[in-house]
Amino acid sequence: MPAIVLVGAQWGDEGKGKATDLLGSDIDYVVKFNGGNNAGHTVVIGDQKYALHLLPSGILSPGCTPVIGNGVVIDLAVLIEELDGLEARGIDTSLLRISASAHLIPPYNRVLDKVTERFLGKRRIGTTGRGIGPTYADKMSRVGIRVQDLYDESILRQKVEAALDVKNQLLLKIYNRRAVEVDEVMEELLRHAERIRPMVADTVLELGEALDAGKTVLFEAGQATLLDVDHGTYPFVTSSNATAGGACTGSGVPPTRIDRVIGVFKAYSTRVGEGPFPTELEDEQGEHLRQVGAEYGTTTGRPRRCGWADVVVGRYARRVNGLTDVVLTKLDVLTGLETLPVCVGYDVQGERFDEMPANQSDFHHARPIYEELPGWTEDITGAREFSDLPPAAQRYVERLEELIGARISVIGIGPGRDEVIVRHDLLGRDESAVA
Image 1 (cartoon, one colour):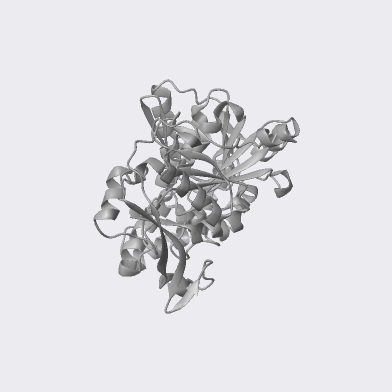
Image 2 (cartoon, one colour):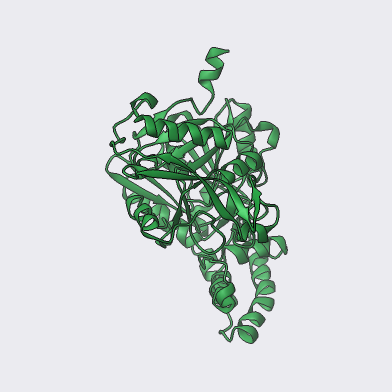
């Protein structure tokens, strides 16, 4: 059985949680391999809506083992709040596994994140202020605190003291904020240590053994391709690797075990926070997409910037991730629009780019070159076969598929769990049957 990576193919919020949920009972493990509680998935099951942040969306599938991998940074209070919320709604969370090597977000990093962003002013990145970036910085500087440190208080205190030697200098002398006390950090970090102890595991070993046993493992990215710290619109990016390669480093599963890579692509484009966004609509059409698509952040509630579909971004995501399949979401939001512009290239000060500019300054100055496709007025939420869609909707999907260069295997035509059209099996079983 396969190991599958699921990534966002734009700037996030594409509907990765729905794609994970669609695979449902076919998946044995779902692994979150990057990010923290700075992003979220919304999954609708029947009349129930679940907003997940730190937890992999597989936690909603009975019998599926959710895993928080070593590449994730964890705010323990947020994790416990999320677990308690699900348990209060009757969801079994007992199968959760947490990597002993995942890093923890200490309170001083939340403080630093917020004051640094304010200090930057007009040069701000658009961070959520949840301590994600500073915690990844600590990880790379080798002064981070990991889950396993909770169970050796002497080592934990030494690490907190060493970190605060520097952090408090910044808070006091640069940002004019009060110093953080060692004891208050220790108290917060240890508060939930015993609660999560049964969940802490050698997840690298467990995932390797699961694949050896023929289990199906899904690696679920937080954030998205254009927010990847190496391959995104730097510096307006997240602090981790949200592309397919991050699944390996963030879980300990080698690339030779990966069978398929699924990219989730919204039928239009959205972005939260600062940074270039060539197809952004700052008019009534952008507001229409925002309202009809309910484009507000799952985690922050911030209104998302909205724009037309950008297949230059799509081709880039296909190449960087090695996409084998695309899940196209929110096609229904485009219903009722007379024409649907699709960005097929960029004009950068008179020069045409059909691929993503390598120079970030060029991308910042990019102006979209559009190809216009006809819209449709028919309600498509009841469609269950591709042939049920209006001809214009079919043509829109086929043209995106052609321009991106990867097959669109699933189409989302509504928020509900069953409001999808499946053209190709995401596990590749229809291919093996033909073979």
